[in-house]
Image 1: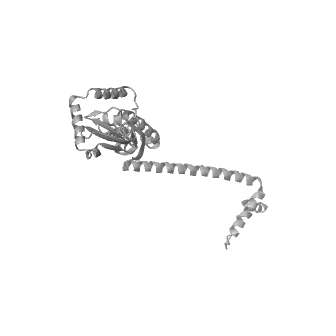
Image 2 (image 1 turned 90 degrees about the vertical axis):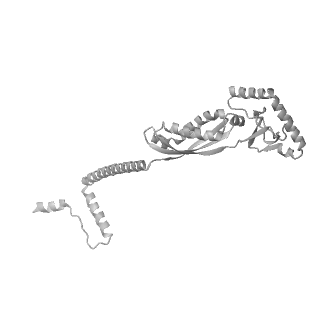
Length: 289
């Protein structure tokens, strides 16, 4: 018996044996109510009538738009699926109500020490986003769906990262996150939980490993710098050789170069000017003697 707005029950994702099991259980519960159940139901209604109208305030329950209520009557699941959102009627003495939040929830996976495939110990933590897709399965099939999902996420994180190298952990985070999400979603499907997203927050290395990687990176940068300097020297020497060959073909070009050098020196207002004297000129004077 319910009043207010009620939504249709959310169907489980696996529509095989789980659906048949839930339907069969509900039918069996409705048909096999024991004599003690009828007695408790009768005395509960009688107590409500005696204490009316005070007791009526304990018979109506409301759930928000983002919540669903699972009602267990004398320990048995009532047929019809989850109740809500809105206002509905319960019998306080024999009905037990479990309210399930359908919003997306999140939790931090505690930092896990993982031995990678290349024998490097790293500390990894992650965050998981999930929501309840089937409130009935979340209440009936698992004791605490949130705690169970947290433990499963920590175990799955260690198992998956144990098959990856350190380079893969650092460069393929998105691929690892997708793998974790698919594995967790498949494992939590019988619990009525949908894992929407898994993100790796941080990968921390030991201090000694950080120093070793820094030294390796520094040595690699120095090696590249030496190679670049050597290539620059090679290119410069090649350009100087080409310039010398061009000047050697025309003696007047060398004279113009001397004049340019003299102009550059005189522009600095130096008191002493060193002017290069061509060796060819001296050899001409020596031959004339």
